[in-house]
Image (cartoon, rainbow, N blue to C red; front, side, top):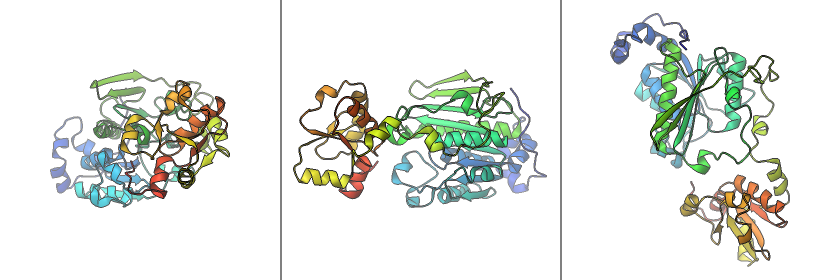
Length: 393
């Protein structure tokens, strides 16, 4: 459905702006008035990472007058495979500052506002209230639900995107005109069910595919042209080069935007709502967690242990802890690998950061391996504390 323009047009375009945006101005649906609306718009991008990088670059190039960036992270070498707004010289630099510098190179006419902080319950309302439109480039469920809830409570539309390996999704959530994120996903997935990009990977160019769609939707909303993805979920399969659109209806029973909402304020703890690990995993790790230093001491002392790497084969090829045997978490959870585990040795599990090994530990405890433990921080802690020469990913 068509929607009215989100912002009023600016008073005028300068001669420099007319020259710069001339290819927009000669499109009848955009024209001078549409470009004036873009100039008058204030758009916040949550995250300057994989999705935020192309989104910010194209929003700036399009002439959005004010761009807000919120990101508290710093640029890491592993980001450069997909986060194209940053370069080698930016490694170690604030992502928000790095992104702002790139935006100014592309379009010095854009005003950039930096929020070099973590988005949380205490600041999300204040920050969102300053903008007309939110572009969500987050990569975790806790922040996604908080972004959605704050947008609904403030009456703000936002453009959402998600990426994983070769698959992407995008939609526009605006409770005033259609569903919100909770209508589509009322509850977060069970802990460990959906790996993050840091665990499962993402094809770098997929960020550009979904990020550019988000910008396309933002421009349509701001200028009032076309039919935005309100009430529709776009699903992209990069391997099959296939786009599908799925209708998403507003849920009358939605706890946030339904007819009788029960969520009328931001949650106290979104991390707790989404759960990094399951309750079973949390319980299993009590008194059954060791550090990387302790693992090294056990190995040096010749302790009779069986070290299990529960990551995926592709990760195991990148880097491994010496002496570890690869048995993916899924094989442990399903019970398929239990017969491979020795009964006369203490089982020690590890993954990349400690989340997957905690889930696998819960399964082992339930199967009778009472003295099994897992390594806090996984292989990343081993690299940091024991062997910094190994590659982190």
